[in-house]
Length: 397
Ligand code: HGY
Ligand code: MN
Ligand code: MN
Image (tube, rainbow, N blue to C red; front, side):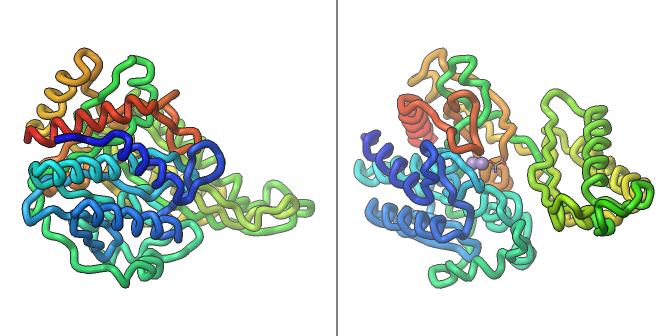
């Protein structure tokens, strides 16, 4: 079965033109934006040209189907608010090329998946979360983005093409190719990574309500300053999380807004996000207990109200031994001595999918370990090598 690396790279660049940021190869293509929907429609047309039957489900996941029983390959095509051209896109286009080459050569049936909102504009891995049943569509519909738009309202933009959720038993397994998004392989010089397991995550949005007031006339002792409370919260979280963290534990306050955000007004409200990731289920939960204790302490000491939203959760996931072995064997054949086993600190749809069918992942290096940024990139030779290894593994299972 003959892959066409030029066609694969052309499709990848074309996908990168949807929402191109104008800064390097970066993209701005969050879930359900006009460019995300246009990209999904274009991908659907490429799948149809390849001979696949396309299917959008109610949450916006796109499948390119080859028959009633097939191996599924894919990832996601939505991006972070400032994203790279490969995060997710690589896995979808790799799936498309492998499925297309297999049809051309009369090979085994391979289908393609393009999950929606992997990057969590609304939830955490929302499209695969709903498809695999971790959350219901009704629950997902209540999720809002940071501007307060509800997923239920925006997914109506794709309702015209939406059909039912596909049964999982149509697929014999799931393979996802992705960039590493960290420095490991760039430093070690390896070309292929076989993922052993994927970290778990907890993510929550938090609102602090203080008292908006005049910045010149309000004595320090009388203030209920939402920003100072946020700052204190962050300091305490750093201290308390550090005390239980391993070198692999990470946490991030990535989104924050204070209101009214003016130099001469004591902030009355602060909204922010907090997420933490770890490979150990018990530690993830213990960190949530710490978070709740810190919220109570800050609320009391700073005289503010602190409200925690629903905690989004994806549990740590081990990859399937048989599929992992297929990836290892293919890596050893096509990149002898230049591959390794490694865990994933980034989340991936494969974590959700692994709960309903065997799933495994392959990584290629990220130049400088950069991702979730416009300058994310990977050498084209590494992209093609990853495609070839994934294809070899797909044909062997
Ligand atoms: O944040 C993540 O790990 C993923 O890229 N959504
Ligand atoms: Mn991704
Ligand atoms: Mn990402």
